[in-house]
Length: 106
Image 1 (tube, rainbow, N blue to C red):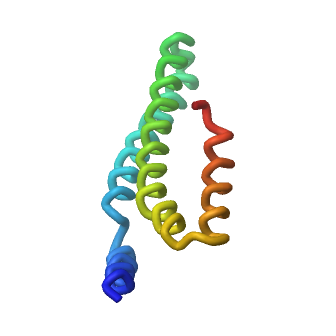
Image 2: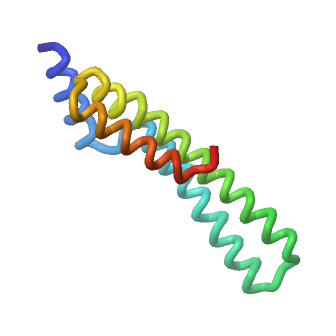
């Protein structure tokens, strides 16, 4: 029964604002947004191509970092819960995760 109460508390918390991990990701995404706007200006101003490519590389690395933060939360919560429940949900979540990971560079 305690497990059910913990889930209710978690759901209630989510309704009051983003989870702490999501807040961290949102801050990083806001920074990335600024970086992309900076790249846009660099292209408009015809800055040196290598400088633009360097900034693009930095944005890719930043996005990858945000993806890792979100992936960790997904594994710690959604995947963990599905593994404990077993059955079809377990298989489904593993397939879903493997599909996403197959698209990534590992």
